[in-house]
Image (spheres, rainbow, N blue to C red):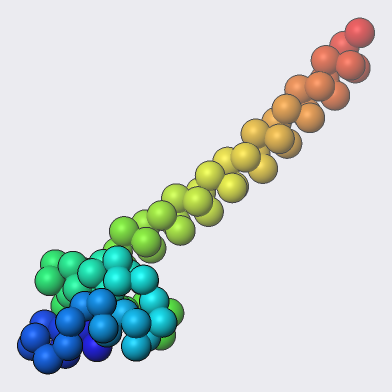
Length: 83
């Protein structure tokens, strides 16, 4: 559909109506293709580099929260034992 809109065969609103999506979504897809065709729709589990980095950072944050919780509990145990 994006190709048909780009080639001016179909209007954006007509294409969006045919796909049963909002025309803004189709415009977003067109912008993504204009920026980087190879990265626009990676598919098959391949993420854009910034998405992969976000996933990696979320995993790091999760591990740090676990470590923080463990240290917090250990500190509470040591404080309780010293009384």
